[in-house]
Image (tube, rainbow, N blue to C red):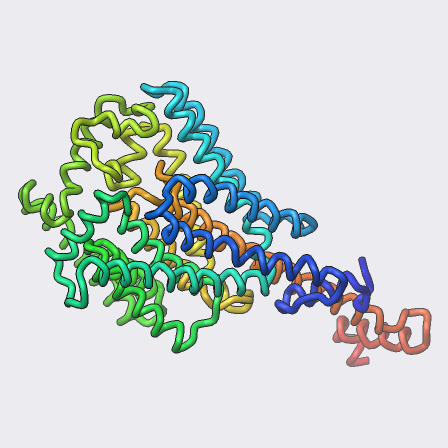
Length: 467
């Protein structure tokens, strides 16, 4: 064991306190911060280049993301692998292995294998990135770059709306027509709106909340929800916030707050059940903006091949195919990968939710980071959005929205790794403190030590004290 004043002990103590070591490693740290800014800005710049030169944006996007992640990983290769990072690698390896086997049994194996290869590439992003985000300054720079990316996406939405619609107040009918016109030109406005909102949520997992950031978030939410031609962003964000409030209420130690949370949860469950049971197919299709019909097709295809599914992108073989597939990641998993593949996908979803839950409700004495509620909000937002949209943790688009979802996974795992480092440093420092205190106690061979031994013996034997 190292003495308390050794360099290793000081390094661990600094890591637990969140301070940065001062050594010749400053240059790699600076490079890490610079490369951390590349990833979020690349996500935003993709949409700026996409409308004019789609092929160039697609050609440069994925190699840039991978090269940046590999570089950041190499800069921090000396870091100890944490349990959270091992669990992440295991879950992603399970997902890729199962889906590779299912690709061989798909209706179109070459197409399924090509899409699986894209999935494998995107799964390497969180594994390579999460280690670098354990560095405090790198994580802060990454969060600031995500804010900039969110602002760029919001500005793009606003400018595009003014360009096509003019300076008029948005109405639902007008924005739907506006969204349809953009889809004909190949611009997926839903994905841009999602990136605008979710990049902000991801950034708040890494940055300290201020009034400026809170105000900026409200503006970005208003832009992404009111100008995108879809009710989805606002609805998903609102339901995610409601679920987060209910979860915190149910965990409250106050009886009245817990009862109120239970009533809210029951009311939400009953309301959803009654709405689905009493509404007609036409009404459900109207409420879900046509998604109900697509979900029915997905369930029908699942019933035909329930075990292994039809394979990646089998939705393109449907007569009713539209861009975005079934607009539901869960039903897409069932229809394309069957129960076997769906179980692997749900393992990843459960891993993300468990990590977010752990960060939000960890003991206060182990906290080295105060944004656990943002982490859980991001997990809930991502999992609820999977009910109504496809780009995310399981999809075939492989665009910025998909990469952002896996970047968020890297952020969550890096926060768990930071907590592991913090707890290890606390235990390490505690052992050194105990060892230092033990070394100050005189040995029994010395006169002072002999006196202390007699005092201890008298305290253990009350009869000797009476004598």
